Image (spheres, rainbow, N blue to C red):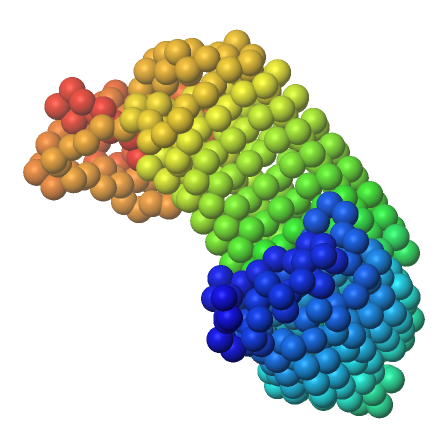
Length: 517
């Protein structure tokens, strides 16, 4: 059967030399492949040359060339002029990219990664840089020559994200390539930034003059990184990952950052002992992950943070004593996970947290005795609730948990904690005893003023009589009992903080939050 020039709409995978050699026999006249082309990729590829593909002129989809440990040249693709999707070259034995000289355009990312012998990007000189989406050149340990003209032109006006790192000197960072190109780098409008050494931090302002926004993904990871002062001009970031900085003790240098439009991840930083430097951050649009920082005692530095749009993970910070610093956090858009923080004894800094958008998990916090601080989370905002393996935890009857138990919205697991919080039944019993469950009423009552520091008045819309007022602290302990109600209830002797006020209407109890300043 003779194929017309357009062919293979579903693409083709060529894993062996025999398949390459017989391509023209199997697909005569096939020059314009409509789908993806994958070359190599098997557990072992014996491909040594691509000569059997010499008639291919166009590929409508992606071109993947990967895992060809015996392929040291792309000769055979000399007739190829266009690629409709990605050009992906990974884990081959190539010295350069000769054979692609006639490729004029691609329709996606240019990805050159993990080619151990690759020394030069030569071969791509005629590729139109405006057709490249993201430029990804990384983990090629011998690659030192990246400053071909079209790469230089792309870096002058990037059309997508730039990820250049872990190559040889000369092509190890965008500034190194720019030096070879003899151009001045702009602030990368789509990112990305990789800082693997203190020198790369220190030279940021000279490498990227007048750049004060870190767009895209930024990674700070280096065993010699001691400070971030070279980033002091930055006022906003997108995704920021600070990890494996063994000598970094604080986040000073990011003091001017007020917006994080993606995630903030801080993990595996052995000497990090304060989050000072993040004082101006008031919101994080994505997730906040603080994990495996063994010397971090509190979250001081995040005291202006009010909102986390994604998940909140506090995980395996072995010296963490409290969540001090999160006192003004009011909402988390995803799940909240607190686990394996073996010194964490206090959650009260979360007293302002009013809602989450996923699971609430408290697990393996060995010295934690109380869930006080989680009182004000709207139980309806909790998806699944897991409280387990906290060996000292006996006080779980905070309002959010009690209300969730009254009407679970998902999976519920309470086990392997201390007596009082060792099972769902134990917590429910205590919740009932202190009357912390909420109920629905047709009558609307209000407490005024709230917050207050002297006296409060409780009034109901239908004029019902309010009786038996009780005030509980954040630990669920009764601290004030008023059996005879006058117009005003004196609270002047109570310390500032958040309380639960309980009162009866026609024999039924209602509970509301009371703030005292």
